Structure formats: structure tokens, C-alpha cells
Image 1 (cartoon, rainbow, N blue to C red):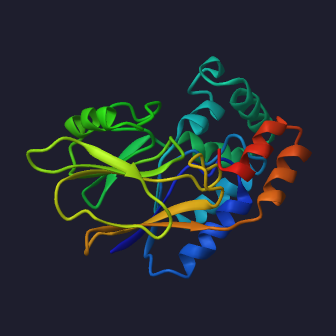
Image 2 (tube, one colour):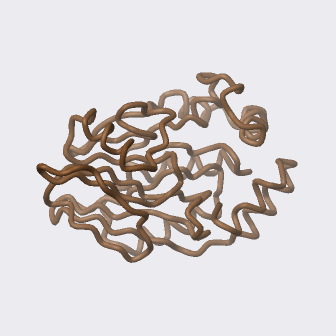
Length: 243
């Protein structure tokens, strides 16, 4: 089975639409989402509804949990906190209920799924080989998927070795047949790896490969929506730079 892996949409409907179109043109049979449907962006209801319609598996991220009151706003930066408060004011009741039912960890087809990490499904940013090593020690499945950092990357540990990893660019295919793996598809709605294009990953469970994808989207449209909502201008500006 081939599965499209997405994460960190963050209320960016323009990016989500583009990724869904890209996935529809691919051989993907299912879509799994690793959380953070809302936060930062200006179209939370549209993004939740698209996830409800298209995903076979959907986790909840820290921003989703904050919107439903599960995490105190003091744990967020000022911009993130303002976006959470705004989302709480505008999101529809059905979409809020959907977010409330999501959890930050799960499993599907013998693959571990975490919004952040196997050690801390809500908050840990896995961006170093040291943290990856600790997560690989903690995980129960050979292959695990993580989001949260907004960076497309992979970490692996082969038998008898130590963990290593790297940022993965568009078009990269990784053979995951051997060893233990942590794979991050990058962010749909707010990439932070210097590439502003929306990110997703194709996981082929039969061939045991992971292929990293990027697609263009209407960045100016997403930025304009953020500004029109009265959210911090920095949340609009960063989209252009992939930061």
C-alpha cells in the first residue's frame, strides 16, 4: 500500500488544497495526517473539513490541543498564542469536536505515528541525531513517522550503528528496508526548512521506500488571508521564506 503522509497544515487552506491535488494525481491509496490542522493560518474550518473528508488516519497536534483547551496558552509563543485565541473564537462547533477527539500518537500498518516524537508525542522537536537516538530507543515500531518540527527529514539507525540523519529535499527517495527509522514529511502549511513550497511524503509500505515531495501553492493568497483576519503580520511574512 502507498500512503501519502502529511503534517502541520496550520490553517493554510491554500497549501492544503495544493497538496491534496498533488496527492490525487499520485498513486497514493490513503492519506495519514500527523496533526496540527489549525494554528497560525486563517482558515481553520476549511482545513479541518478537508482533513475530515480526505484522511484515513489523523492525529492531533499541540495547536489542535490548545484550541480545544487541552494545553495552556502560556506554553506558546506570542504569535502562536494569538492565533490559538483567534481560532477558538471563529472555529465551528463540529470542527472543534473533531479536533477534541484527536490524539497525538497512534499506529497504522505496523508504523508508529506521532505528532512530535515517540518520547513526547506533543512537544519534542526531533532535529538532532542525539534526540533521534533516544527516540529510536523508545519507539516500539521499526518505522515511525513524526511531524511538529516543520522540517522534512529522516533519521535512521542500522544494526550495530548509531543514529544519523539529514534534511530531505524534493525528489529524494529513501530505502527504509533495513534498520530503524524516524521520518518527517515536513509541513504542508508552514515549512521551516528554507523551501516555502508545501511538503508531503509518499510512504510505500510494500516496497519500503519513502519519497519526499514539494508543491507550489498560492503563498500570497494564504498570507492575505492571515492579514485579513488580523493575525500577526509575521505569520504571513514567514510563508514566503519557508521559515
